[in-house]
Length: 495
Image (tube, rainbow, N blue to C red; front, side):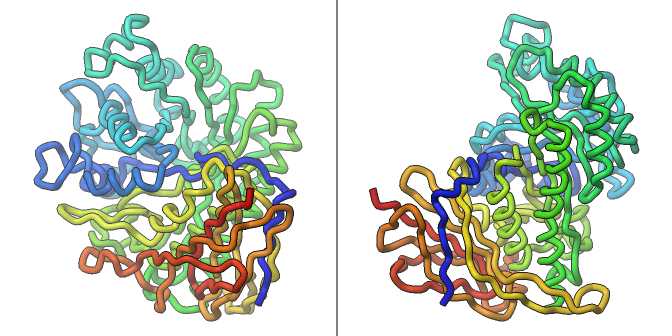
């Protein structure tokens, strides 16, 4: 039996609730037939949005939701999505899937969804194909009090007199690629130009700059070097890291399990190295990292639509463990992170929901976010546990290794939340909690997400194939973290 030490004297900082953020782009089946079914749909809905999804999403306390892109944002005109007459246009993804944007879901509809689920909006604004005035005008429309500007009055005429108070604004998206194919120096000058106008709007806002793709450390260095002489309007630096795929999304081998896990574990090194560059330029007091796209990216075709919805994929216990270890990394480095957004909410990439017509189900990854929600706003503490090395055959047919456990812990008031991912596909792990600096009550609530078959996933036919089991445990005895499983412990501090 191994001891899991909870080192209460070693505070790592507060876990921003926004680390548990989400992302909904106008792509494939995310918005239409995913979130939105229409007000006249026979599918149960509230103002056009799926009621099942609203209720389940609200239950995990989503802190922030990024919209409308993604790459979609770089050809989006926000005026297309307000008022009664809305144009149908090609969008950034039309050449990929042949679909056109109807603009049924625009600013007002999206804000209504946010209000229904109790989340903050994070708007990704178009930098590539518009002027700085375009973003400033959208801010004016969203945030100016009624009666102060013409755009505020137009918002009121469209049904919402009170300001939307949108706080988070991304100035462009992936401008190193589909968002203009810019150099970091060019983008830095564009960000300086756009943000200087955006930041002098009087309402509170957080401006987020386009940062690197994965381990492109040169982008971060060159961007920050160009920004170094600038008046600082940047509050966050975006980082995108997808851990790709290893084998089939569902029928993967044991070695492919480990290959996927190892790729996901790279997140820690990537965010640490980018943060070291931020510190080297002395910008750590101005801006933190915003990992606003992350997750697995498997080949198309494994989801319910069988390839009709672009980038839709099935979600197994492997994806759940990837989500768990990633969130543990974020918790343990919470002082470096302003926000993170898993990609995406429904019917796309590392989704929490899969939906079509009358059907809507949660994925194993949804359960991870539900199990981890106690970390939001809590004080992270360091943990220590003896780990074992697991050998496997990597992608280049060479032997590689990973450690078998991923852990994070936090406390808020007297409630302690400990989350553990067993990365081994072969061996259960027995642990005993060993708190240092505080005493815990004798029993705890334990939630377990694990299946005998780590390929297990939920389908429209078996929506509860993967679900969470809850039990009470004696903290004076050992407990088991199943192989390829995720465990949350909730314990109370003795006052």
